[in-house]
Amino acid sequence: MSELVYLHPMIVHFPIALLIIGFLSDLAGLVLKRQFFSSAGLFLLILGTISLVAAYLSGNAAGEGLAEEGPLKRALDFHEGAAELTLWIMLFAAIFRLGMLVMKKTTTGWRWIAVGLFFLGVLSVARTGYYGGRLVFNHAAGVQIAIDTEAEASSESGINSSSTNPQ
Image (cartoon, rainbow, N blue to C red; front, side, top):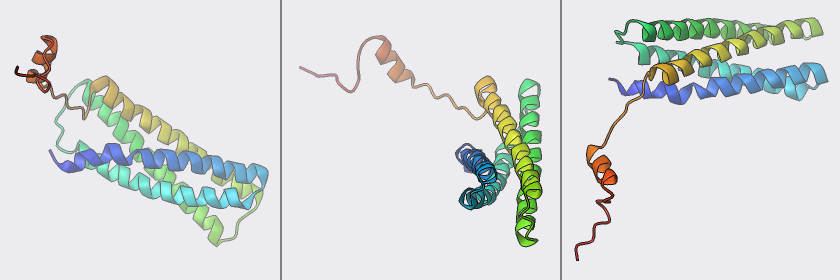
């Protein structure tokens, strides 16, 4: 198994956090009419989308070579499909928002459309995370259980091998 498999669980938290906080910031900028929040929302949208691409690519690398069937395969397919949809929504939302900036479309109507796209993307991120969580917690995907039988035997008998004191 490739060491790249371990990248995905470390990377996925970045798009989740960046995109949710970015959406809230963008919404606050629109409602409160504060440019700082709108700019922060755009910046976090771009960073979150870049990190989403990294999470998607690392997830594909983690899933390669799995020849699972049954419930695990279905759960993996749901997660992968949700991740792909999320990627496309967030790429479109980021391009749309950058296009607004370039074309100087700053009216409230355009901003509500952009925030609505961002919201759809955040919902999709949450859905993808839900399916990823089910993979780990319901199917133990990527979970390795290493049982140290010597330590287990000594703890059951009440002997701690590191504290034995020959007298």
